[in-house]
Image (cartoon, rainbow, N blue to C red; front, side, top):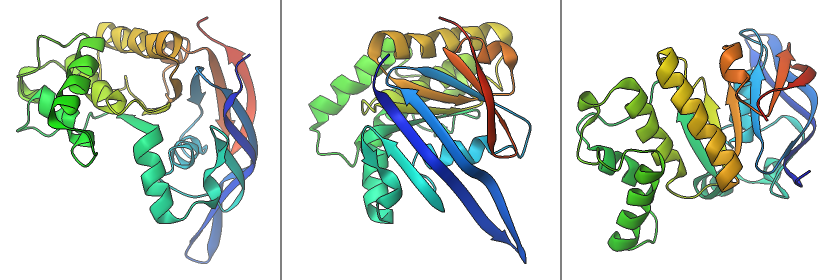
Length: 231
């Protein structure tokens, strides 16, 4: 088994809602090996999105440790966390979040514009990312000229263009038809298997979860066990 990319110990997140303290995650322990495709399932309010936000550095835990690639990101300042996130995490969302007036190429290039890469280096990375998701022939198309599945593939290319080690996916197939969803899941499997990306995906769809290497179920902030998915 690969060394853990993600190692959570007693991971807890609480916040105040009026006079009440809400704890969506409590004392959670979790190891995710490098290169694993992990699915997270559970009812609304079970803590899935909270966990995803913690793993991606969008939010910080109240207690516990959260190590990613050996670094305890729970100890990072807000500024350090922002820089860490830009280097190590790619996001894939249900609704794509593409800029309508930009082409596929320009949308994928966005995360690189603040980097120190030259224009030539940026363009090479964008072309590679779009080829990897099978859209090398759609680089000049704006989102309105693409299908939903193609838009999601542009979003995945944008997520991987900076070569992050961790991809977090929040319902990435939730807005797609069955065939498009299957192609997206095949692409995610390939990114984990062939390119060593560690992927954590939140989904309500058992068929999507079955594409992952492993499925974990969350209930009221607690892990209930896991099952093997696609191998």
